[in-house]
Image (cartoon, rainbow, N blue to C red; front, side, top):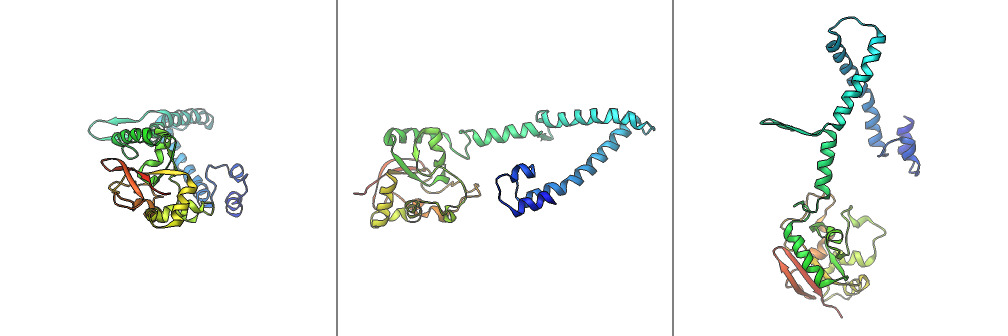
Length: 255
């Protein structure tokens, strides 16, 4: 109760140490604490099952059980944690702890993952880099362009897939103007000034027609990026420099 109350009643930086959990919001700590009795019950059931298996229901002294139980429990724990994932042919795959962690990490950080960037997008990014050099490039990050700073050294303006910027009080006014109305740059002096403030000379649409926007990213909200995603080949204020498949690179034409 003390842990649960402390995590819900304060935002002090030391509460992670006090709670002892990676997550310290009251909902997760409540669930974790509630799971402790269930874990104890489960361990007790496993213990009774092992006792019957090992001793065949024979009565043994508590001293004997105390010798066997820790060793068996540790052996099972080590096996469950460190044993690699395996497949039962014709039936199903069994993912163990380390095996699943390895697979998830590989999927999330593999730049060849088609959910993030495919080979054609990598190739397009390489050609874009030759054109833009070290110039700032405006983008809608959820089309995959957020990853191009790390993979292709392109100076993307938006590099994060965090939650909506709408509620971020620290977002620069220029960024907010661009997200909401960039496509009006040909006629709107405010947008022109906002773009000048960023120092950007190009805009990259890695997914020009939104055919495969990364909607699986739960933080994606199309209304946040309408100013950029409404740009097309006929939008005033932009000159098409390069296109390939669903990708476009435009030069921003402002005085």
